[in-house]
Length: 352
Ligand code: GDP
Image 1 (cartoon, rainbow, N blue to C red):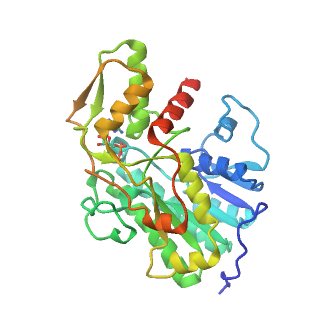
Image 2: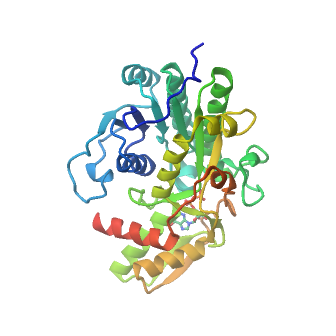
């Protein structure tokens, strides 16, 4: 069996593969790595090449930053993934590729959510093991926790109760990804880690009203209502569920931080079975959907009223993460919610 314990830490020339470069999280991780001077990055995309401005945040910029290469792969295809890992031989892998979406998308396409996520992560995690990848970071989600988990939710609350039905297939796939990392660490001595972000938002988010999460959906709805002079904006559900929102740049910073943890820290805190191989990433504070809607309304400068459509599902009543483990490792999120919404709105307007 290969000895995975002879590990060199991540260095600026390490070959780093970012699966899901076109997504909000993958592109933010790439920006973060480039800012920190990593210069041997390979990002994957599926259907169409992501615009260069995803990686620089300069609108309409056409040239890909130096140090970044993009490749097209169907990550649900096992042969393609195997071949790619054999050729690239990456040192480190950020597994940010996933089928993601808001409450309506999860509820409407449950088969695609479970199938695509299981396929992508199963292919990548196994190929990373075969290619002797030094470290892999799997991106999960706070929806892995039981619907009725005590708040704030700690890492050890995983698999202690029933899941929220609107996104159960997605959550089951993400739980399988965590357990796969833990199993490979136990059996093969790999260093496959995971981070569980709370609700993310920021540049390159999905603003499609059918498939997006609440925050980008409301930015778009308020902006369109302001422009058309509509008297009200419809907010789904009762407005009472609580959510914790984290800017994607903080998430990217946390991901790079965890990937760079010193070996003894990883070995003691994250790969020491039965300790969980994952760590929560959040801000530690949440607010109601009504409150976030009012903040977005103010940022956009919309003067009309809100109407709550209670025929739409609320989803889980609350999902606040306990972030004490992340804090104890030395990381704290920096970006304030209102400022983050202002920046995201600014980014959105520049691309209209
Ligand atoms: P969740 O965190 O997995 O439940 O996903 P979402 O971000 O899609 O939804 C969070 C909460 O916001 C739910 O209670 C939704 O009903 C509510 N919500 C209010 N308005 C909207 C909207 O326009 N789009 C979405 N996706 N959710 C909304």
